[in-house]
Image (tube, rainbow, N blue to C red):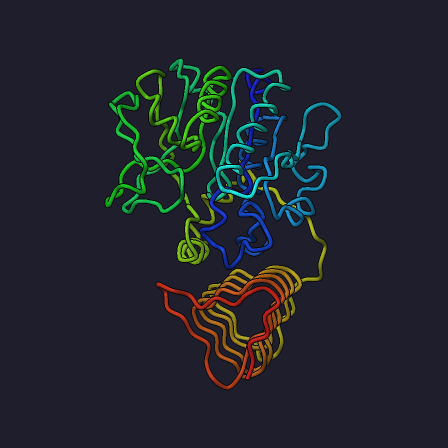
Length: 372
């Protein structure tokens, strides 16, 4: 099978600075999402659903929560004696951004050297989508491509570092690829999932090692003339997490059933670490509508148009509307929260309403106590 000759690589710290309020002590890959998942769950599940059994996770810093989440890879069927999940920690430990990028590239090259593969699927960790990787790899092989870039049609340029804006012909061959950060308009924007032949992957990463700008996307854009580079459009739902605004907006989009049905496709499940907890308890005074509520919550107040992670407590008289509350958050009695994004284990509430807007949600940090 061709998928036994394909390896996957996930860069877990890609664009950490996009949500520095939430990535101070965790990587982008371990950022909680959709009530019970982490962002990395989508990349790993996409690879596993395609039959790829060799997955390497490149880590740089703040990876304790990621290690705890991934464990041996059991929940993704990657706990294997041969192949399976490999966590690739840093071995240079430089202090600059360039050192980090070079370190990632070196470790990605070393990881592939030890794998008997012909193709490489490389994924950033800041996207949310249910991709049919099998079809993408098949298209890559059919067109005899060296590089295939998965893209979406979008109205605005992504802020995500490494996003490319493509121009393609009717056969999807890439005529040009430029840094999307330089563009003021949307278009065909890559989502951070690329397929390479092994030789092209090694050449592009080796070139990056000797470049003043070691960003892989920049090297790809420079080599569109040398290699057979193709695009592959994903027409389903895509959330690109490139700012705290996009994190909030993407989380809110899950309240649309069509989005949930596309993202959590039963034919290609999204797997995550299983945590056994009691069912959510709804009190006599609870009022819940159009919300995603994870297990272990206790709801005695009003919750509307919100996403609540495991173990959230909304006490009597409290109103939570258009909010994303991560695990263990407590909302005090008679409090009002609107357009709030809260990290884990915060305690929130008081006489004064805590409100943001749909353009700029109010941020509560991990373990913060925000009461009067």
